[in-house]
Length: 403
Image 1 (tube, rainbow, N blue to C red):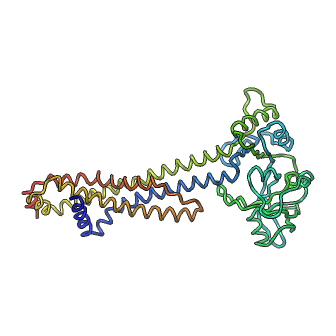
Image 2: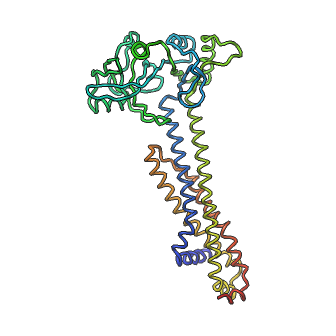
């Protein structure tokens, strides 16, 4: 009996294909928007997690001043660190496996006749170890080069391409402002960060070389710390804070004039923001489903009016009210499900294209897809019930008189 009812519903829909399509368009847009938004949001969250993992999940970043907003904001009046602070942290905090000072600035790199503006960073080999950033070609800094502040540099892949193309740059000279240095290595590509910046657009030199030849001072604005395996980063951060408070003579009850950021906390914060935005966008998109449901109810009311005579004949020859109710209710649900299927295909297609364009993972959630499809069916039931009930309660005599 149900199969016959479905066949009649499909026949009724096929009689007015264009009108039926326009009726379910709201459901199509609603389902597609929800699936696309949630899928893109999940992909963005995964990309954030991957980007932070590239920096190392057991990495702590220490800055002078308390962070306010953004990746670089801090209180400028706080006293900067120096290299002795790094050495003391390594000596007094056993949870630290490696630590490196880090300084950076924008500079024009010149190789031959090619000029390219990039970021130069003063670091040590410990920075590469802490951030799990291997040297793909050549080598890292030698201890003697770091101690003496030798003019040697390691190129990021983007800088290598801009200055040397695909040729081997090892042993070549690069001028960084007034500093001429020799290329000793090329870093493995890392791609864009969570903030959209190109991590490979960098040149690294020993931190002492940076201080003597570029910045002209001994200040350190960032310390990267790699925590030993098996040690909680929260515990390590607590120990570091204790040592730093003593080093910087911060009294009991006084606020820290430095900040220690855990990369896991950064990942959690960024994914939390992404999840909230995804939820808000999905909720807005879901409104389209309600609009689509109203469209279905409207067209079903029109259909009941147009088929009043047919309904009268069915009731007159012995059809029960519940059978008429079932017929129109099934028709509304079928319309809604057709819209749901089209919406799923469209939503996944849009999400796949967007993921490719945004260079993020394509991560559809089967539960969201099933949920959107089920919600489209529910919309058909809710908004199709009133027109179907109106048809079922018709007086056969009055229906037969309808022209």
